[in-house]
Image (cartoon, rainbow, N blue to C red; front, side, top):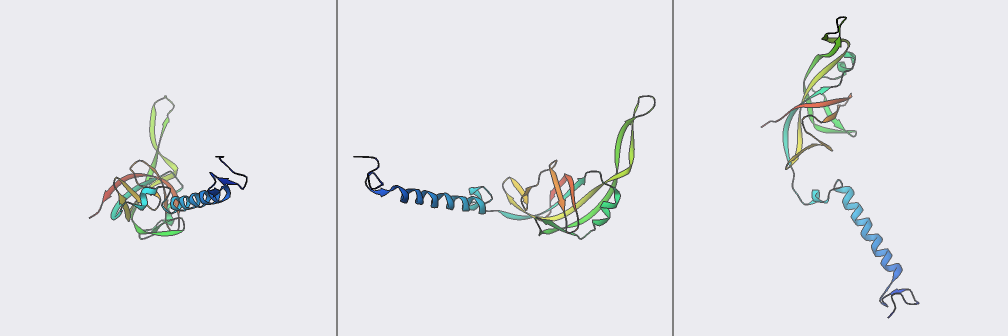
Length: 165
């Protein structure tokens, strides 16, 4: 018994091109499942719940004019879509610099050109043990976060995170 016969049949049962076609269909189906489940097939089988969370981000230093475009009540966004969340508080703080003085001593002073902002937002996130996600981003204190509203997108770091009941 030959592996492939003259007619192109594998084990004298199925044509080799039919087998390749079936393998191609299986790869396409697995690719579609991977794409729609966020590259994690477990997403299709586990349940997520939505929780209301309040988090605070500290932006990187920018000129103070940038922060004028953030207003209380702005909707949060990601990938050109609005997320169920709003900005609840904005506080502009000094950007502190540590520089040596003429005597070689380290002195901390506020930066005259750049400021930081503490922006607090309340948003509904998906929770799947142990991960909180807002859109595609995992929310963990200390992570870099691109704070995006309908008007502005700023690089920031998550400094506070609490569940609101």
